[in-house]
Image 1 (cartoon, rainbow, N blue to C red):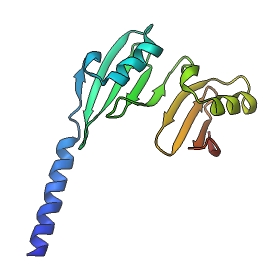
Image 2 (image 1 turned 180 degrees about the vertical axis):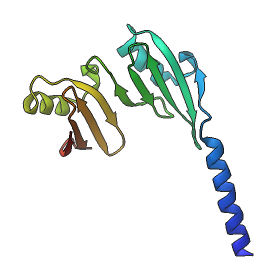
Image 3 (image 1 turned 90 degrees about the vertical axis):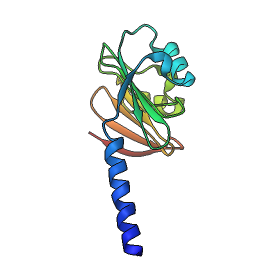
Length: 146
């Protein structure tokens, strides 16, 4: 009987996972969490929106906003930004922690930060020369990739 319930649970988990995939839906900016709306108004009000997508998760949703210049901004379910990816310009300096911007200015003089990712434990930046620098939560360098 235990095997039956285990098999049923695994089958249910597989079906649920497959249903959660590709359920992205287009939304308007006013459907984003308030924190995300404020972030976009503060840092990207001069750009033209291409589209915004809500990505339902098991708990809450994640959001992705893309502008016509190919700038992409991703948000978690609370509306906090997780990724800012600019193709042709530097990310706004105001979202880069001072420790990271100081390190980049000192170590990679003249390079701009085109992409920044953050999560609970790490920060990662991609520079205009293609290098990726990863920092821990205390802003110590833990890796450099090209």
